[in-house]
Length: 104
Image 1 (cartoon, helix red, strand yellow):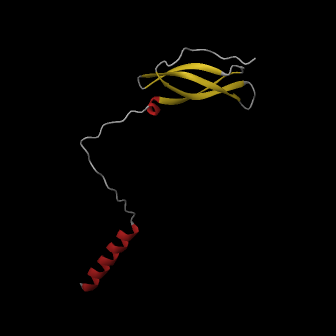
Image 2 (cartoon, helix red, strand yellow):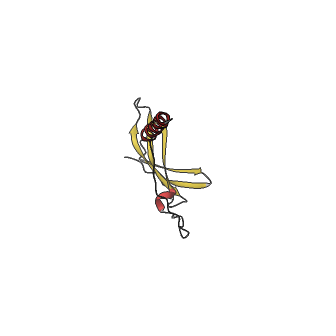
Image 3 (cartoon, helix red, strand yellow):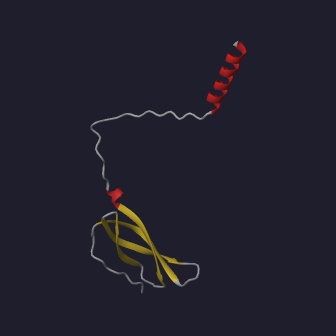
């Protein structure tokens, strides 16, 4: 019986030591409020359009019930040279009037 108890204890110890253990400390606070920052109301967008020499374009997009708008900028052409790639971050709401910049 003693041999069985030692074997059981050894197996339990070996299994316990080999299993990963995740420990974390969690604190609850009743006075926490969500913080909304301007950075949380921005999204990254990308557009691929037929080749153009326009340096920026105004875009409006709706995601999760919010309307985002702003300028995205021409980052060059794709590998074929037939399309322009526009990228940038846009914010919630209309912040400026749409205006298109043209390269001379």
